[in-house]
Length: 266
Image (tube, rainbow, N blue to C red; front, top):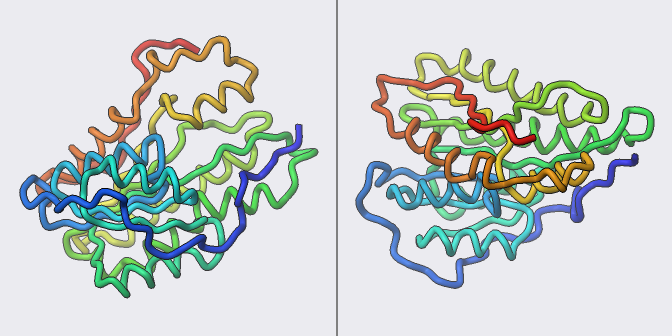
């Protein structure tokens, strides 16, 4: 089976700022009032649920994803005044351009949630090296550079939340598993390097979650008849864990959380 890169992969940043069609004043109260969050991969699934949870807790949220239509819809569901940035974060210049746009608009980000990702499946023998490059760029390189460029904002009271797959190395999953292994290593390295800077690093590892991507995973595994989304984790479950962790007093830090469905249905 030959792996096909997702539509639009490798394209430059699609656009700058796309305002939500329904602009509502941001929440002035709530446990996260006064904080500004950047959520990458926010157009659907876990990223969208996290963005909405943060917004409803009072944070100002900037949403980033590759597809402008679903991204604007996600921002509208948040019910906040803010903006979205459409970018393919696997494109080499995209992280830099995203941060430059944030700077231009005077945004100071103290909460970064990285949930962007893509599921690429294929055997080593017939998966092009470009698929591995894309997977590593999107899953590991982009959050690496975003954190690096946002570090002045994040130090002294910030949070970095990285969504990492629970996937284990298996036939057909070489590129995907390698990319998430790299992200796990980066999360732990970052935590060691920022110790003493009042910057918390949280690694969230959700098991199978009922998202559009998960449905495609079941389809590609040839098990769509056994797909029961109601028995899987829901994006809101993961979002509630993220929200709880970032609301903790600064004296406390959750470093790793792994969730899984309580009922095995697959």
